[in-house]
Image (cartoon, rainbow, N blue to C red):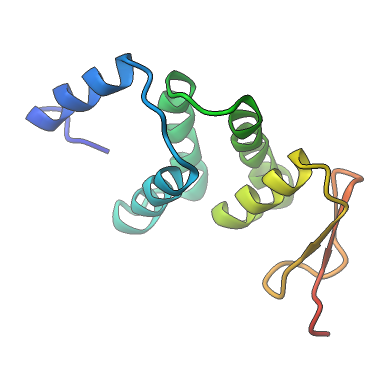
Length: 119
C-alpha cells in the first residue's frame, strides 16, 4: 500500500493502467507486506489485492485461482498462503494435497482432500 500523497503512488497508478504482468511471487509478497508489515487482516489484504489484480495480466486460471482463494479464506478460514496453494490445486484439478500444516482429512469443495503424510 502506498501513502495517499506519495510520488510512488502516481508511478504505481501509471504502471497499473498499462496492465502489467504480475507473477504469483509478486502477489504473495504483496499479501505478506499487507498482512505482516501493515498489520492488515488477511481478509483486508485479499480485498486490497482484488482491487488492483483485475487490471494486471495473469493467465485466466491464475486470476480465477486468486478469486477462489479469497472465497476459501471466508469459507474454510484458511491462512492466506494456504488458501492460494489450495486454490491453485483446485484449479489444476488435483484431488489430493499433501501438507503437514493444514487440517488433515479436510475435503475442500468436494474435490480436494488434504492429507498430512507424516501422521
